Amino acid sequence: MKYISDAFKYRREELEQLVKDPENEEYYCETEEEAQFVLEDKDEYIAANVFYVPKEARYEYIMANARRSDIGKLIDDAMDLIERENPKQLRGVLPKVYTKAPLDPHTLGEIVNLIGSINFGKNEELDVLGRVYEYFLSEFARKEGKRGGEFFTPSSVVKLLVEMIQPLHGRVFDPCCGSGGMFVQSICFVEAHAGKKGYISIYGQESNPTTYRLCKMNLAIRGIEADIRLGNSFTDDQFKDLRADYILANPPFNDSAWGADRLANDVRWKYGLPPDSNANYAWIQHFIYHLAPKGVAGFVLANGSMTTSNNAEYEIRKRIIEDNLVDCMVALPPQLFYTTGIPACLWFIRKGRETKEILFIDARKMGVMIDRTHRELTDEEIQKIAQTYHNWRNKNGYEDVKGFCASVPVEVVAQNDYVLAPGRYVGVEETQEDDIPFEEKMAELTEKLYQQMKEARRLDEIIKANLEELGYGE
Image (tube, rainbow, N blue to C red):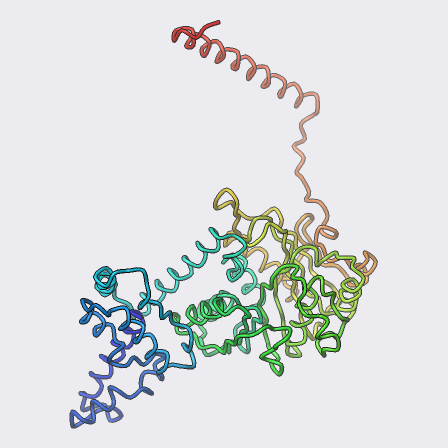
């Protein structure tokens, strides 16, 4: 609420200057009545990508009434007013829980005044607010594990997906969008390449109502316009006619009972009906169905999706490969995800491919530990993987590297029973020989071992002497 109010205030101040400027033919007002009409014109705020805030919902009004006993109700009413004035982005998103919050009115009023000392609204503050919001999402996901991580994909994985498919222009779709991290990173990518937010159109669907609201809020505080809809992507596809240029997704791993019995004849299962025991290949075909003729999809799945021998899944994978849709496979290092310890991989599906080869990248040895249980890909590693992919696609100096990457003809993949695990094709990393004869190396290591054993005996004697001084000798 404070951020929305401040953004409104800054835009209002801009308009106040414009209506007073005689040289500005578009905005100059001769009377106070005309000026007030412009200052309260909702369209003037929407045009600047700012939410319109009614007087009773502006933060200065809330602060002026912070000492009232019904301050909780005032806040809830303000949230409701803001939603009603901006239904497209905020309907059902803002929390209205302060009337019944377990806080006495005095404490809640002090919190209102404390937050009132923070200024938001300018671009730099907006960026900080977005990063703070992402920080709390990631911290909640980390501490809650599987329950908290269902809506959050680690930022290094999102960055890698975006760097690989490079969504600069067109329609971006995520049918299991969680808190919207894929969209935020896509916008960051566009802006980093001198583009504007409007260069891409964003579409998303989420089945969890709470996560849906998190996504709407995440995008709203960053000024990102998007069409986000609530519903199950399998049984209630909200975008049946959408054909996206880019699909980015991290669907639930190995989901069961996803509704195969109700969707047996669905048009999306071009390559075969996926088993109800595992939704992985339902997601893959859902992505393919929603791709434009030259579209590309990058998504996360459990490693088992690359090698499964389940009859239905094997046949689907075989047909997808034979239809020349698989562009690249990346094996990820362990411990990247808060949700699960299951090893994961990245699939890249591209329609309209000309090459008859698939790029395999084995990144299992990459990443650095950020705490005892979680790993993260570094920016340098992300660039190495992404640049390898783009060099391969653009035929720009790409070469196979043993243990890391290999470009493999589709017929060779067929000979390997359509297995898509990079480890099957990239080989073993070459180790540099040090050219030291075995006898010389063994003598050096033995000498070092004896020195360490001698030092260990010396330390044992010191420890023994210290214990005897303390009266704990043998």
